[in-house]
Amino acid sequence: MSALILYNARLVDKDRDGPGALLVENGQIVAVCDGDCKNPELLFGDRAQNARTFDVQGCALMPSFIDLHTHFRDPGFTYKEDIDSACQAAVAGGFGTVVCMANTNPVVSDTQAAFSVRQRAEKLGLLRLFQAVSATEGFDGKSTDHLDALDPCSVPLVSEDGKEVASARVMRDVMKKCAEKGVVLSCHCEDPDLADEAKEYRTRALEADAQDMESFFIDRGELSNDRRPKSGVLCSVPNSVSGPLAEAEHILRLAEDLMTGRNLTLAEETGCKVHFAHVSTSGALSLIRSAKLKNSQGASKVSCEVTPHHLSLTRDCVAIVNPPLRTEKDRLSLIEGLCDGTIDAIASDHAPHSLEDKQKGAPGFSGIQAVFPVCYTALVSNKRISLSRLSALLSANPASILGIQAGLIGPGYPADLVVVNTEGETLFEGQSWYSKSINSPYLGHRYAGQVVATFYQGKMVFAQ
Image 1 (cartoon, helix red, strand yellow):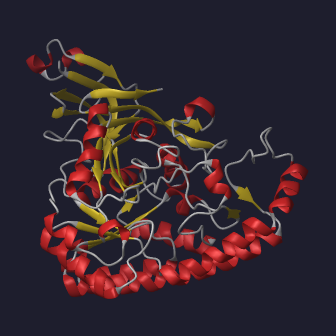
Image 2 (tube, one colour):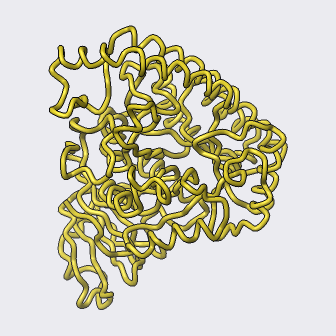
Image 3 (cartoon, one colour):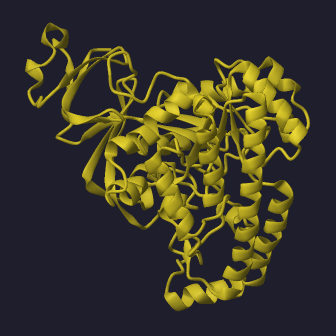
């Protein structure tokens, strides 16, 4: 592959924000030119002879994003999403690396199965995929013997995401083995018994008020020709629906806070490197902050992520997702956690579903493609954080958690890059939406910021 020069750029990562250019060879960044570099012929001397050029046109050139938490539904649920469609959506969102959860069919519970999924993604040549392995074998909540043969080079992360390991004894055993292997354990903090109780309230809302909901949308003129709500999210719905969902949210708040405390205690006891997925309550965040402050030397063993929807939406928008959308107080607490460094990463929790599954109450949003515009709008445009800080949350910090060399702009780093137009805007609709599934609160809405192009190992894999 010939060399590539990306010039006339605003280079942004967690440590830099200024004009510059890059020289890429064999899929890696080999040189960086800082300064106003608008003429590629004057850059990098003899090393740049016969190099291809790409004019970034003053846009921000950033390390491509790393998603620690996705559900690609493959194998077993490809009617919702598959490797191909999910990878297309990911690169359209500026992602170069993703971690897929194990709640597939069959559940991914060993290195060989994880490698098989990863290999299928590699054949597409669009991004780097890591497949998580389940914390208990087949999600049975009991068996951990499969972790003894885990290869940490192939599987850097273990997770029971989609449910929680109910038994403290079993979770303690999982953490011990992850600590011995040197892999990260991503915790889905939700008490299973309370989650089941909350599900009953959600079912009541869905079943009892189907007619009220349809009448509500007809009155507002928000039903499409196929009787589906035109918007991806339901706002200000009748009390008959919002009441039971509010009770479910209250129960799930308790479920998250309880399990966050338990898992922090077990992690301290075992020395396991734990990562807390989709933190959504001010209470859970406070527990994580206290754990980090308690032992600053061991702070690197505790990390956490937050989703774009918990940063941008509240329970005023009634839609079923786990954890639920919370209060404005919670949302602002999460933003404070981004600012003070308690929260390490932003992850999509991309969870595509079919229309039929959503009608039956399946929780989750499809949204990997929307992460940057949603976060740029909610955080950078509103001057909550800088673009460099957003880069840290989406790239450098996730790379550090996974233990991979990525997420920064510099010689020796992979040429996994994204061009974003901070002056542009994004409207998600129609053919511009690459996921198979439309269960998304972002569809039909405009956001500040636009992903213009994505490069993987120096090759352009997406362009507007």
